[in-house]
Image (cartoon, rainbow, N blue to C red; front, side, top):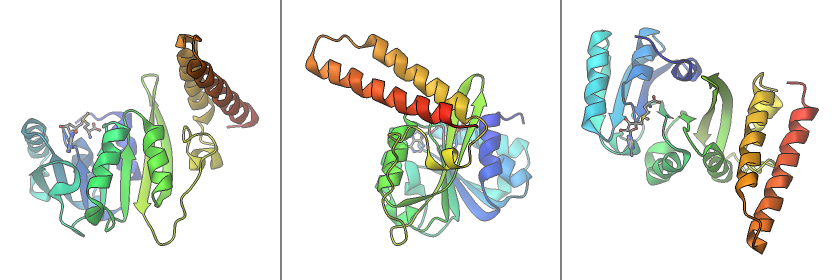
Length: 233
Ligand SMILES: C[S@@+](CC[C@H](N)C(=O)[O-])C[C@H]1O[C@@H](n2cnc3c(N)ncnc32)[C@H](O)[C@@H]1O
């Protein structure tokens, strides 16, 4: 089984646990690798479509770990009972869908020791939601694969201890990545600046609203540049 660096990072970040669920499992590689490395005792592979689940089952059989896995059909966390798993992974889905799945099943979410999120798009929308809805950010990571960056957020819902957090960079970059001066931080910021510059170029400055939007982007680019050029990462 040959798995990507994007998925390997997930496997590395998941702590030793009894049971972990993979929501939107598709091929099932994350749980299979976690079982092979003996980081978990049991895996619940969950997906809202039958074909991916069947794929996961076939891959688990090929790797001889199928007896340590459950395969469940359903949306998001609906396939889990409260307190049944220590933690969950959701990877490769858009940030907006991930936010929706978290919001839909708070009864399950509040029992989890960790949720590892790897949004495929809109990471800043998901990050803003997490910061503002009492999730503690336990760890953040970045991986670059084929010139694309992948963001990872290891979080825990904690309404008692955590205050809503504010991110002065508009949730584009996580505070933990900044604090630990992640080795990919400068390149990541450069790619975000480039994305913003491309958006700015496309704005047709014919209305007041468009001018305001362009000014906001210019400000954001300035902030990101100052963080990048002031950091020694
Ligand atoms: C792009 S794949 C990502 C697979 C794997 N997690 C990864 O990171 O490589 C997304 C998977 O999520 C599943 N999915 C989409 N919406 C879902 C939902 N609401 N609940 C559970 N699974 C869902 C899809 O069927 C698909 O298998």
